[in-house]
Length: 364
Ligand code: HEC
Ligand SMILES: [Cu+2]
Image (tube, rainbow, N blue to C red; front, side, top):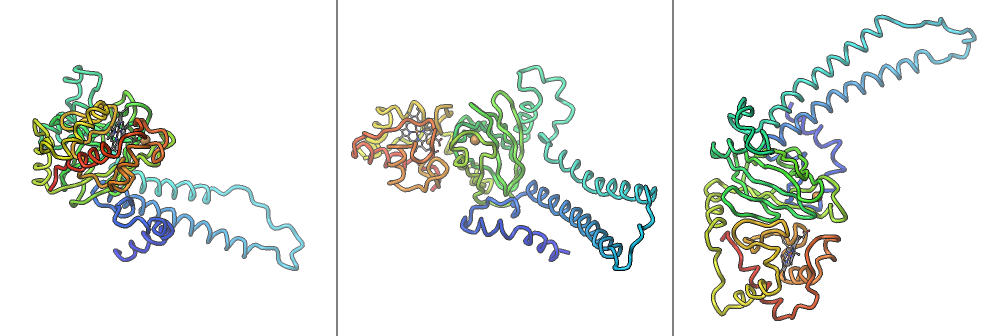
């Protein structure tokens, strides 16, 4: 059974795998699930594939039998017997699809509830405390999840970056850290237009809608990096609105949170190039859009741990040259993004700023 399953997995997908072959260890495939929700989605896809395959095989077999058996033969010159209607046939092709639909519906509905599960032990409470704010039941269930010790992260979609606000009061841009092996809850909303939060290897997608609070949970079986995408066309750089989910062992995650929520983010050593960069960062107004330490802002991604980033702005390889090019001309990388350009910054200031940003690391 297992072996056969693998064939089903690979046959229709070989073309897709070829397309993805250049991507390396990106973990961007819904066909290679790394968490329980993604596993459920794949299992259901395979089940539907079986059902559809059976229908196709049966229908086409009957069709070809009919074509061959009842074709006109050389000495046929009379009309065959003309029949109209058949109760048996009508019943058969009504009842069989009903069974097939039940086979699909039962797991689909069960799975929908499984995925829509809002939080541990949240059932039945939405009536009483729902008055507090406009958020209604979702925010409340997330609160309860937090009480249970579950990690709850607020996710805001912006053209074209992701803001991740943690309950501990700090913010992370474009790369979200979670503990592996447990359900993590994401409260989804958007600042400007509709975006959609999708980490194919971990689970389903859910829209980020301005003024609406959506909720989704994801779980990563193992520590690792999982690529995420915006899955709702949101403007010219929609396709570049990538992010990463970085799952850590629980103790590493706790250490990371502790670092990120430090009262005072570590200041660069006095007199160093990085300290100079810190000054330029303030003088040039970068600080107005980019938080370093503490809560984030809607103007631009928090850069508190920028030195740990694997990518710049979600899509550009992290190198000093690319960082400089980004600061000088962000539009050349992501058309229509909202960062101010600094084409005329002196090389000295630029080097200092690049050094400073690179010094902002929280992980060893
Ligand atoms: C008007 C607000 C604004 C100002 C001022 C600004 N930025 Fe940005 N910056 C943004 C926005 C918005 C993005 C996200 C762009 C995107 O990906 O769509 C961004 C992205 C970035 C990124 C990539 C972040 C990531 O998560 O990978 C870096 C690095 C950066 N800015 C550095 C700077 C520096 C250095 C300055 C000052 C010289 C600066 N920014 C000034 C708005 C601003
Ligand atoms: Cu988007």
